[in-house]
Image (cartoon, rainbow, N blue to C red; front, side, top):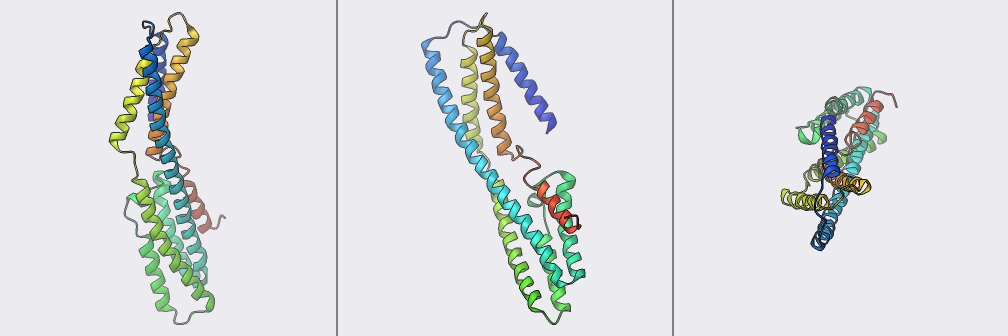
Length: 244
């Protein structure tokens, strides 16, 4: 990720230098109309996509928080099934989160096979087979855990679906075309011997590229990498380890 960011800033600096030193003939009325139209279309498209992807990120963040909250609740409720059963469930949950922390991938369990739900269900089956009598508290806890497992399965499906809601390639092509139109028309504006004008052109070009970078980061869910699930995963692991 850091390598990509460094390349991005190098491109910005290079383009800024190019715009600063670029000299063209005075712009015509056609250029002004072209800039206005390109700016309008670029703003409409990128504004819509950024808003849509930001909403998508928000939904994923909320669903991941609920997913982690359900697992944390299952661990706490399992204390009513005895220390051994709680430890088994705790170990299963820790194994669920270890790849996330190790690989720094919040979506690891949504892109790879996960046996967390099945393993917890099997542990509960073993407990039920070994425990002929249930107290009222253990019955209520079992109902809570069963309900939480159903919620987790539903949340997992929602997260997987939201993760796949990327901007289509055709729409990316349109955005890039409008951005290119803007960069070309802005570079044609006269700024020879006019330092402020050259700086404004460079700043405008950098802004356009930055918008594309932000949009791409939202689309890849990389803009808030580390905030979506890794911190939440560590929080659940700390609870199981007794640190919270």
